[in-house]
Image 1: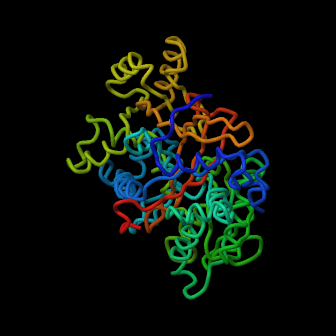
Image 2: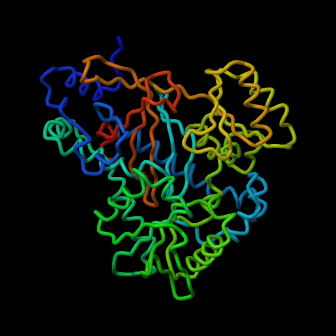
Image 3: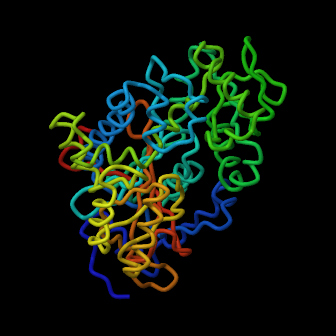
Length: 452
């Protein structure tokens, strides 16, 4: 397809190089990487996504500020009362029992935001909080694979490209989180899924993340919650003492499992008493709720924020409204959303991985009305559509330049931005398109190179 040249200059140079039939960049094959080779169904863009570091670092400051706001909402809105927080978010009250009280010390922050670049700036689509956020198995390996190629490294060196090593930054955060348990040595880590969770989620993800953490020097076990034993003296997993439990399961996976419930409560208490480190603490599951976005965006709900905080949110977060079952004014919100169908996307409160999303511009008026009715009954968030800028890339098999929409997954760790990469679909296609590509993210110094 014919396409206009990209506005981003380093991307344009990459495309020009890839357009040459004899370019050595055409021979880069991510499947040669020992970890990426096991991602059987993954497909890759012919080039990385590249951004000026000054732009990304400015977004980082706003992102971390928004994360801080997000994690303080239970205190600001509900006086730190877990039961009130769960009730306001429409969560199963048994989750409040599992969480107990919020921790006195704020837990280490870790998660991933999904963002689009709209041609002017990066915009946050949603926050994903906790250890079970996806994509970690490919982000750093894919960047390293490109950098290991002599031709790409020569190009990258000439233009100052570099990437943020996601797994390495995560490893540093894990060491810091476990320091009070095993000072002076690396922690033994147990990666723990819910009962039956490994069969559902681990293929091509958790086992690969385990290999990456082992490459960072950790002794790392993987299994399910029924293999975890927690006592007053500490935690054992598969019969071995462990220092840090990397929690891959969420509260939904244990509320109906009495044995897993009891183990999780003991794990929570052992973490708070310093017997074991927990990544991530149970309360992070409350923060990971789409309804909280409305408390940041909706003018009727954000009286808890200062003007500077509102300005920060408005820079990074699109217009967002919550459809709360039974809430006062719900009919007005639904009517407003019905009129704005072509500008909105509807996301169920409990959805993840793109499940249950309705794109207003891709459905009929009746389909949109049906989706809004279901959202009002079960809980959902309506959000202003962000139209991503086109990312152009040369298809090395056909030689044609194609246009892609990139959803950036950007991780944060306690120290700041923790790396990221892009999931891409052909421009205009829905995010759950079966023809998706992955791409690493590289930065390059611009006028503000001192920020590096």
